[in-house]
Image 1 (spheres, rainbow, N blue to C red):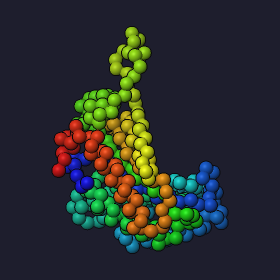
Image 2 (cartoon, rainbow, N blue to C red; image 1 turned 90 degrees about the vertical axis):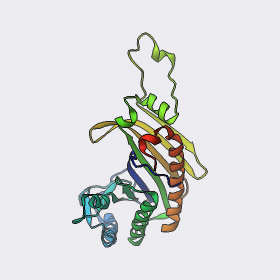
Image 3 (cartoon, rainbow, N blue to C red; image 1 turned 180 degrees about the horizontal axis):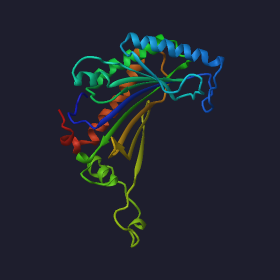
Image 4 (cartoon, helix red, strand yellow; image 1 turned 30 degrees about the horizontal axis):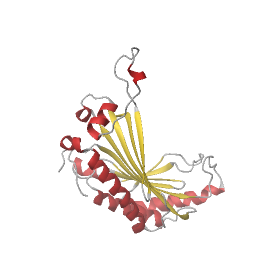
Length: 266
């Protein structure tokens, strides 16, 4: 399952790794001694990622401010100073984010293939596990998310309901009450969610209206959340993320067949 598209609609790919901590989930974590262990962890991770080339760290919530569990706090990027524009763009196409009980590995365009992204996942997970994350209990929960954006070249002026019907084979029927004498134009559905149970988790597909670089698009999110905790081992975490990727890739490839020409299947 290594099919690729030269004109891929992918805008972001996120591998999300979470673990339980002793901190409250829905209440702010106030500054104090209990945050010291978190700051040590963040410092360790900053050093580990810098060794691996991600030398730029951006603090999204300043030190001394309350923190929320599950939200990114520090972001890590590369900082290319030489090379062609294409080479620099590739260097900047991956980043990491960390917070209380959460670590994400993110990729944007230019995205090449899953095998390349797995190496970024491996790099990030090795750095995470070497940094002694605070209070991991029972292992890690993982989620994989693909976000695609379909602009005018794909939608051809269609409304969302017509687009997902003609291009993905998903039909949403509205009651006749929405086609009575009071209706002026075509009734639309601004979003739809499909959930499909898997033996090892849940596959969710979301369609919605959105914007990318101020241009209207239809967004498609493919999300696989695994339902078991995975031990703190890079290889085992990658096996589970690859399993999630295979589900998303196979189903997206089958669903999007009418778009293969526009996406330039190679």
